[in-house]
Length: 544
Image 1 (cartoon, one colour):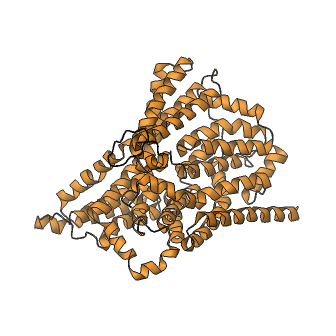
Image 2 (cartoon, rainbow, N blue to C red):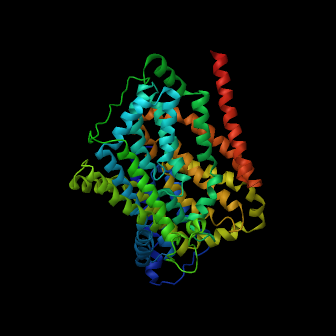
Image 3 (spheres, rainbow, N blue to C red):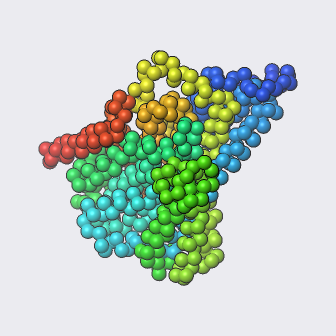
């Protein structure tokens, strides 16, 4: 289908939605509760958003059209009321409810810009180039750095690539392998880190399940098979040396010929303005400060230090209870803002940047985070209208409590994983995917059902998997840029690896549907992962 036809189709969809308002406008009547409340029509807005996203591979307009349809249904077709729902109950409510996450994202972008400008990233690259020995060491260093930078995937991609590029080049590691290592740690580590922008966003969508959003996120971590098994796969691949698919040719060319690209097309190194006086500590210290104060902010808001902001819960000195009682949308920006001030003062005292340069990094951070902020606003708006105004949660809960649905509940985690994979792959966004699916998933299971954690993790794991595979994903694109790798090559070389882990994760979710115990399912997945790598290595040995 021609791309030029999509604006016409979207325009027709909008006209159709507006046409639905004519009869109600003529009647001139409004009711307090929509006639579509807690009916199948409550699911139509997210279905439209998902359908359009799959067809157009564009998430912004898809989410907006879903919101518009939801607003019309919530207003029973009355134009003025529909616009009020769209603006006030949808977009403005979403901005007000997630303003803390917006601030956290902007601060993250500013910290990345500060570290690059001060020369900390470049200094670490110079240090690693002389201290890291061998191909295994270089790959392990890249993996460890990717895991340590767990605050945000943008933060990860913007840092790991520029830091490790000279190290991996020196040890003849192909640009395709570097891009995979960056991409395979960026989103997966953020999805299993309680202190991250992803945790803040997920916890926002997961409220209303009987647990705080952050508590549900933490309990779902052991079942996030795709993220965890991706790490097992990377370590096994590094130590076993079992590259296969297109990646094998790239690695052989890098080792035997010194050809890091395996193609005539090249990506020139990007010139980054930085201070040559920067040291490794100028990268390590800002990251450590940011992590410490982000965690401290969550604990403070949760009452760990004896300040009970919410009332009714005594969490003084109780780490777990404080995390369960905290609000990530308040705690993360609370702590990260203090960290930003400390980082700016530190870099200025080191005379690495001026005050003006530090202030210039703030709008740079905002610009880098605009895509994430836009997706979060639209996805939250869709959730507000579908759940609060149309009662989609009430309708889904009724369906899932039926005898027929209960008989299939054991297979739902595997189904949720596949649906999330396909949606994230088509749209190129994890946030848009779990923003649409989480409100539905959390109403499929009761709060005391252990499958709630499995289903939640299946949604998050599928979103990461699809995003990891998608050629239009921001993280995939930034990983290519960070590794200075041709984007098409990065996508084609990492796809067999991602599909392997996805297939094993799917089997684990089938097992978890019947045995919701991570201590049983994870070892099964790890054994299958290592077994597959050993099998591929033996095939390569025989072929040689």
